[in-house]
Length: 163
Length: 163
Image (cartoon, rainbow over all chains, first blue to last red; front, side, top):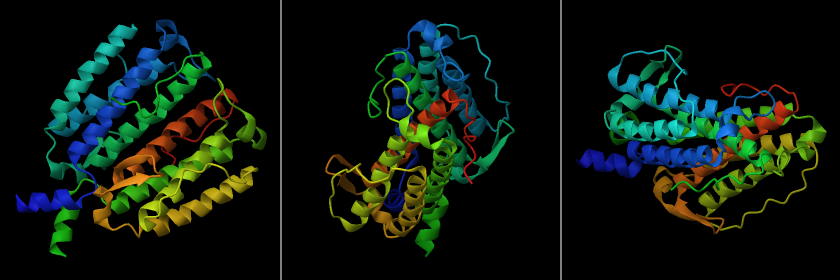
């Protein structure tokens, strides 16, 4: 107990705080999904890029499957295919992932974060580096969704609106 | 020494690792700046958004001034004005900030990361939360720069190209 208290006082970020920050980002991403009209969510893009629904599906294909691999140790391949074809299905899948992230996260022992994992058989880094990469990737693509929305004349949610 | 070793083994992220990840992101952002033609860097935008030079100037206005405030305790206001008018001046300012970030970061004692600071008199959060917000903000706006580049027919650097 004393050792844990010492760590919590000294470390710059706890696993729980990292999770909370990620889920806050995911709430903002959900608002960005919701801000798109159905047709443009699946069809609008700029400069040959993917529509925002495809970017969101990429985020879904990384988050829970990645955590599942960390927890179970069973290596999977990255698989972006799914049957999501409507905005509501995408939002429902997003909410389901929100719950599953909570479940899997709590099964990652603290010492695992610094252990290497070859995620999806492609990304051979410590667990924490892989998870950080996933969150950064979400922020990156969501920022692109902001430009799509602006181009469509739609005001995106504020960057700090994560509740 | 024993306590420090215990922390390093148990914590998910050290201050040095966070710094390295940030500087890696900043190397990628520098490549995005460099990928823009001079005129479009300062003049091109989509949907009424700011040109990428303005977004990069915002990143500069946050990074070193924010760290300086953390280290010195002297509160400043956010000031985005500067005299940068060319791509080379922007890249030079970026490189200068890269060095200054190293200097200031090393002056933040580990226990400060969890302390509150009212950064720029506006953002009243723990130091680490403020710094994370700044990095996330950079990733967010850089992602927007990717869309600008694609719209201009220019291939952006890969998201993982951070060396």
